[in-house]
Length: 403
Image (tube, rainbow, N blue to C red):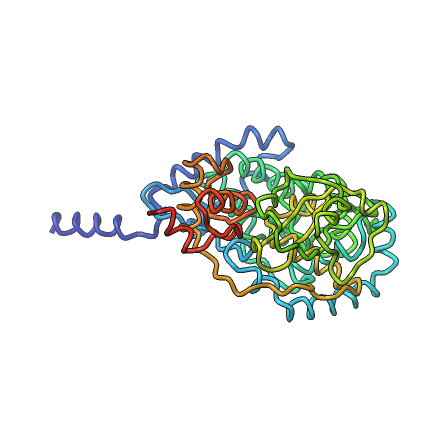
């Protein structure tokens, strides 16, 4: 019977929920953060309350757990085609609601623009994209998310800092129940990480506290202050849609290649809908962005495009927010329609990036995301091998690389 009991005990250990065997190590790791938390002003009582019963959430994506297959974040910005992500029906719905909110908060939005230089339609668009104007309930407990990512995520140091600042938020009176987040730990109506909260949160309604969870003035002003802090240029647009000439060199579509918008126009890039640009606009430096390579719309992107990109490092995210801001202000749909090109899977893009890197054509991170630098490297490969240079990663190009 003793042997049978031992066997049952071993089986129980082997079949328990994932992560339980490492929970002791997790608890030890939590305690190792106490000294740093204390330096941020967190009391022992607050710390113990926050970590009591806390367990890692191993179901989160972007973790690095030995012996376990990686769960890649399925962020729509990185796995959907532009046509699917930037749907006209979605813009119609969000823009209509955004215009209502622009009327409702007209005075407050004007004050935000006067104080921070960021137009009201831009911060409304961020609010609409991040939480559907507050209608989307964030699914996770931020403290648990940040602790897990700091303990076993791919960016441990980054998330350790965010975890410590989340503890500081608790110390400063933010209720744990309010701290709901995405899988990456961002919170509130406009999605702030804890350290960003301490840099940019604003008590814009002047009630004595910065409340990015329930106060629309605080959340939108905080988003505006963050954009201003990252270099937003008042009075300038986020981007200009253009029609590219047939002989356009798609490999120029990288941030490092900039020239005044007027010079791009001289090269045959035509502003959408026949838009007439002022002398100041024509003198503004900009890069070329072609999200689908030679297919779909093209854009000239000045500084404010890249400021928005610091809010979320995805071209599709910036296109969504920027275009929604235009639509809220009464703008038209994209002039050039998005194509029906297929999107390679993440692991296929990674394979392509590794091959391009080995050939010396790609020097950025291997992340499976077909961003600007990946697309330009694909175009360089196509040119070098006598293929049609459209800067779009396809199965045919990948197959050519393999052979």
